[in-house]
Image 1 (tube, rainbow, N blue to C red):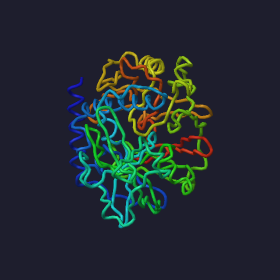
Image 2 (image 1 turned 135 degrees about the vertical axis):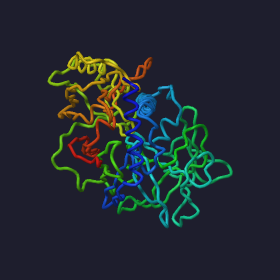
Image 3 (image 1 turned 30 degrees about the vertical axis):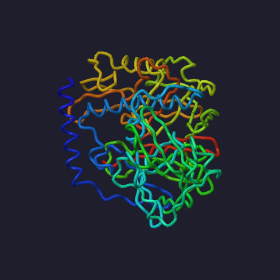
Image 4 (image 1 turned 60 degrees about the horizontal axis):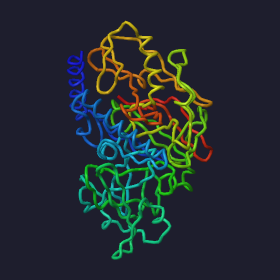
Length: 439
C-alpha cells in the first residue's frame, strides 16, 4: 500500500512544485488593516520550495514530530511550574512556521516575513550581525532612522522575558531558551508597517545570537495576550480583536487573510466564550463539551475535556500546530467510532497517523461541540488524501506515547477555510465558513 501511495504523492508534489515555479500568481496586495496570509509549505511559499517536504511520507513524519513538540511546548506553558522541555529540538518549534504574513520595519521600511503564532507573546526579528541566525534577509537597525534600543529600567524592559542589563550597556536585553537552543536579543523599538497601518515605537527583540538549532529564519508576530505581544501593543489601534482565514498547504500564494481590528469582521458568526487560564493568559482556551461522529456523540470522559486552570487542562485554539491533537481518551473515542463506521476496509497507518485506508471510503462527518457553538468539519478539514491513488488518513492524533499531556489542541488544518474571530474585549471566539484556499 505505502509504496504506491508514496510514489503517487511524491510525483504529485514534484509536479506541483515544478508547475508552481512558472504558475504562481502575482502576490495580492495587503490593504487597509488586512494582511494576506500564506501557508509556509505551499507550492508558492515565500520561504521557497525548500520549505516543502521532499515526499508525502516525509512531510507527514516531519509534521507529526513537529506537532508533538509543539504540543509539549503548549502543555508546558499551560501548567505553572511545569519543568519539562519539548522532547525535540527547538528547530521544531521556532524554525518552521506554519503561516506567514508580510510586514515592513524601520525608516525607510525593510521588508520582512513574520510567522503568525496565536499562542506566543514574543516579537522577534533576526537582525544584522546575529551569530547563528540562518536568515538571508535580516533587519538592519543601522539603516533605520527611527530605530532605538530600549533602555534599562524602562517599563518595557521589565516586561521582557528574562531581562538583563550588563554593566557595560545601558540597553535592555533578554533571552529565551527552547530545548537545546537559546536566543539572545536586544529589546528594541521601531516603526512597524502592516498593510496600510503603521505601529509607531513597536517593541521587539532584535536577535543578536542563537545557539543550538532554534534560530528562526523569519520574524515572529506573537498574537497572544501578553504585555509585549502584537495584540497588546496595538490595543488602541485594533481593540484586541483580530480574525483569520487560513488556507490549506495546497493553496497558491497569499490567499488567506489576517484581519486586524473590529472593522470588517463578520456580523453573523457562531461564538463560544473565551476562557482564561491565569497561569498562562495568552493561550486561547475554549470550552469543548463533546465530539460527534456522524450523529453520535462519542463517549468521552468529562475529565478529558474539562477546563482546569490549576492543571492547565482544557482545549485551546492554536495556529502553529498543523493537525489536531486530543488527549488519549478523547482521541480513542473519536478514532474508534470513525473506524466502526468504515468497518470492512483494510486499515493501515502512515506518518504518525493510525487510521488510514488504501481504498475509497466514505468518511463520517466530525463535529466539535463547544459551549454555545458547534463546528462540523468538512472532509478537507478532516482527512488527508493522496493525490494519486485512493489512500486517505484521519488528520488527527493523540498525544505522543508516554506523555501525559492535559491539552486538546484544535490545530490549523481543522481551522482552515473558516473565518476564526478572536474578540478579546468581549471574551469570545467565533467560527464562520469562508473559502480562502486558492488552488
